[in-house]
Length: 373
Picture 1 (spheres, rainbow, N blue to C red):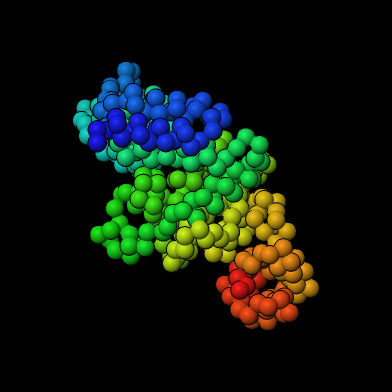
Picture 2: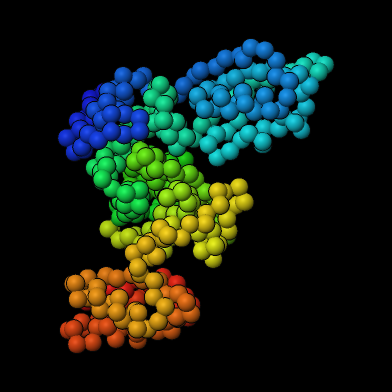
């Protein structure tokens, strides 16, 4: 199938499946598709020599930041007083790109050419934010961007609160995609694609970087302020998100909310809108992350699912069971600790329920998932 025919089919499906509410960058899914179909996709080969002389590391960083923001392939700079310490590539490199440099130094003047290779996630995000950059995307990245846009248009509506928009996106990703166990355990399977939005949306699986970047892209499409966060989980480098709600910041880790083995449609909320204090119980948080102190929009706090005694737990469980809800989650706090399933089983007495499954860590405060049958 020709690529334009393929994208046209994708776009047509998106137009019929999605409403046409206003979006941050495009009026409708159809408008996005028109932009995509009019691009000559592939690697952007823009290169140029910046006029004038760079006289300070600050000017150097500004010039490089402008180039990377525009997904420039190469930029050549003339630098006065160049030295490797002040103009160290480690000061500007990050997970979004790799940088190489070549050039010559004569006296106190240097002419250096910097070459950039961008991650697929960064290319997709920048192209969404600035449609003039859409030609940078390859065929898969164009298809992934279109799919992300159509999903958001389908699950997010203008009458939702910011919390409801975030919840809808979180639940969709966790319920429909799965953690790529093979990539996490086998170096041969740990390819760039499994870290990317394209791998997540087109193949249905990915690792933490794919979860966090897909979530960030969709949240921004929904008009939410969402960033990436980094740290360590279980001794391994990890990536998650920080989201702003009501002027406060929260951590949200979709990877941790989609445990292995994957069960299609299953959603967890253990790491949905946590403060740094809460998240630090399981994660090591990098210092450069935005400080997260919000508590109001934590999933369990906001939905009145925190219990501090056996009586409160039984009230909660009986209320859910009376309404026919058989899968229930709650969080113990205030010194109330479950040591076994006896308090949970007590709510099932006289209801004709003969089985109860409890997922959680006994002997400490925390989150529990209960299923009655």
